[in-house]
Image 1: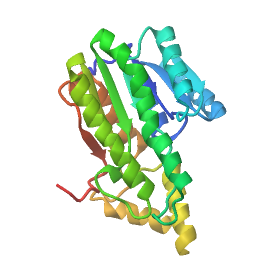
Image 2 (image 1 turned 30 degrees about the vertical axis):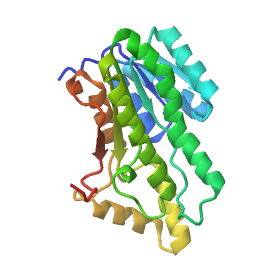
Image 3 (image 1 turned 45 degrees about the vertical axis):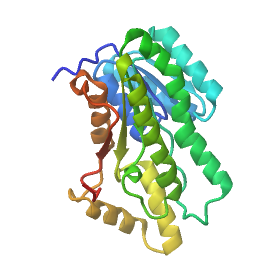
Length: 262
């Protein structure tokens, strides 16, 4: 199936590892020109070079913190200058720490809002004008299953990521007339370093082995396994493609059926 993405410009935030990296690679595999950013300069540069060699595509990188609005502005401007435009923007940031409500400080809340909500605002403000000019664009946010089903001890994620869904729906409604589709993708328990960190935190507070938590999360999904980052990335690429041209304002879960609602 031709996804119609050849030579499109795909910007993927927090893409030096995990779901962001898998997503950047998936776009490269579709012959997109890819812009990657993350805080870790070394990991970002190494992965970008690997993607260039493997997929024979142009890759632009910049290392910065997505909570810095000025840095986001400069990055998007640099991407547009290099590639001529920005067609696809995938917003992403590392998840907030695993904590219950009383254990979370006001600083924790501010950091979560900055990283997991305001960073999406920053990117959307910068890329939408480029997309309006060409009457075509895709904004896809990476959040979590917590937007549909709260997870114990992830109160920061449960609350802040849900705000992103409100933003997604609002942007989809406002800019659909401009040919811009805006959707959210929520992963379930996926085999990433972030999940290992969560298992480690749970282990430290309970005394149980980390593997017990990983096994329990896998068992909670009808497919009885953890997700693969590539499976998540394929969903993002589909939403960005011409094959999903009538899908906007939606949250798509890639969770192996873990969400228990209707």
